[in-house]
Amino acid sequence: MLNEVGQPVLASRLRNDERKYRLTFVVFGIFLAILILNLFWVNTIVLQSKYRAATTVAITPPIATPIPTEMITPTPSTISSPITAPTTTIAAKDHFIPLGSGAGQSADWEDIVGMVASVDLGQYQVIKSVLFEASVTVPTANQYVTLRLYNKTDGHPVWNSEVTMNTASSYLISAPVIYDSGVKLYQVQLKTQLQFPVSISQARIHVILK
Image 1 (tube, rainbow, N blue to C red):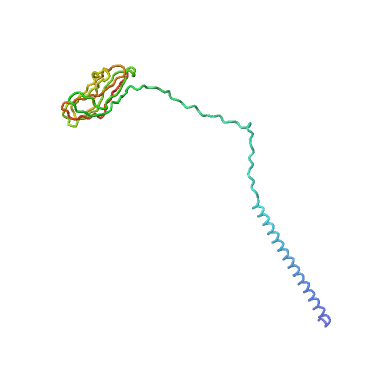
Image 2 (cartoon, one colour):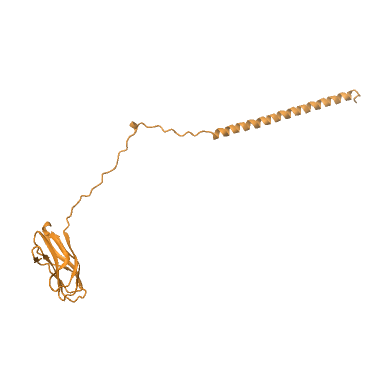
């Protein structure tokens, strides 16, 4: 058993020990808090620095280095020359000299007004034949109609140029005519059997070369 003097001493020691433990826990707690704050601060600063560094990296475009012209080897050209087909000139063998159109109904030979042309058949080389052609219409279709060319320059018909029809319409072609050389005035003439109107939609001289 403790005496009265020992009890206060023991109580004082217990209080001192309790203070030491409390102080130790407080110091340890402060140290731990500082350590945690330090770690948090370090991690935050480091992570932010890395993020900023990653987002601020400048992308530098590649610099094109010029190549000296003497080092450039030209690519050989493969363009081929166009093939030109040989041209062949084919002379036209058919020539047409228009004589116009008109109408008439005379019982004897009459000139059809406006159906005339001045022609030099000698300008055509190597003539095979010359024909007189006409497209004729007879509304009544009940009479004979005859057409011919007349050489007004020399005052005579153009031989073999007469053509005849007795239908409502026809395209008439003469036999090869006998023509005179030089410039001549050729006139279309018409005569009818019953003097009914006759229409000539076109007439022409057809020159055929050999």
